[in-house]
Image (cartoon, rainbow, N blue to C red; front, side, top):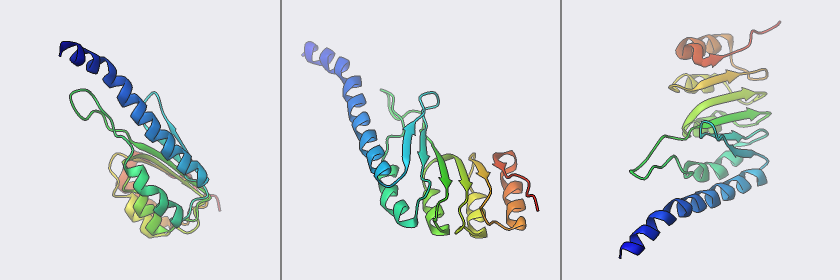
Length: 164
């Protein structure tokens, strides 16, 4: 009995690693088949998700799988959360698609050239807590929505000055 207990304790980390690595590779392959990219930041333990060129259909297809990625583990129970660093560039997602992506545990979101977003997305982003939001060129938020977003998030929001 003692031998089985010791063997189980020694094998547990390897089994957990193998299961999580297999799950991560499956999700990564699915995302890459949809034109995106998923990696794992070894320093902070966060998921780096690039959904450039994504559509609402892409979001609908990937979101259930993304929500089931492991979020941390220690031998005494759940551990530190893993967050998502999300990049959307040249994406044709709508406000609805962005709303769904906000269900991920985001710690950073970067938007650039997302022409289908409206001020409703700025309102949704302003409700994110402890999430860095970076709004680049090609995101058609009104000046008023941008100001409200910056005042809601404070230093968590980066919006370049517009040149006109």
